[in-house]
Length: 264
Image (tube, rainbow, N blue to C red; front, side, top):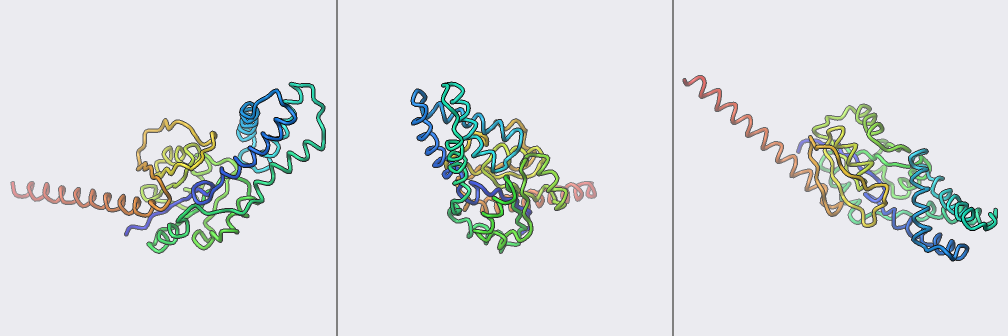
C-alpha cells in the first residue's frame, strides 16, 4: 500500500472535548441566573460565547481565555444591572472555568485501534492540535499518544491555513498523499482544502459554534465525510486503490494510443 502522510486533529477527533466544556458552561449559567435572575440561561450562554469567540479571534486558542470569558460575562451583566462586582465572585468563576482543564481525557471509541492500524500499514502519522502547549501536552501524555505520533506533534494557538502550510513545508509532504482528519470545518477542513491536501471530515457529537463555517473552497483534492473515526483506515485504503486504478487505466490508455500510432 502506498505510504500516506496523515495529520490528525486531537480535540473531538481523537478525544472527547466539547462535552466537558458544555458541562462547565451549564454550571456557569446556573450560577449566573442566581445572581442575575432577570436573564435566562440562553441569554447568558449567548453572551459568554460571543465574548469567548472575540477572544479567540484576538488571542487564539489559548486556554486562559475560556475562564476569562466567564469573568467578562459576569462583568457585562453587572454593568447591565448595577450589581456590585465582587472579587470573590470573579475568583469563583475563574476556578469554575479552569475545571475543564483538569478533567481526565477520554478517547473517542476505536482511537487506539484506528491509529495502530494506520501505523501498522506503514503510514506516517502526525498530530496537529489547536490550543496552548501545556494543556494539549497534558492530554497527549495522559493517552500516551506518542506511541503513534512520536515527536511528530504540532500545537498551534492559531490553527489556520498559515499554521498548516508551515507544517507541510516542515515535513516536506507530498500533498497528493497527505490527509487532514478532523471535526472542525474552520481549523481542519477549510485549511486542508485551501492547501490542496486530502481532507476527512468527521462531525463531532456536540459541535462548537466556532468550528462551523461554510466551505467556500472548490476541492482540488479528496474531501470525504465519515460518521466515525474507525472508518478512516478503510476510506484511505479505498482512495489509494482508486488512485492506483486511475493511474493504471491512464497507463493502459497511453500504451494503446502508442501502439495504434506505430501500427498506422
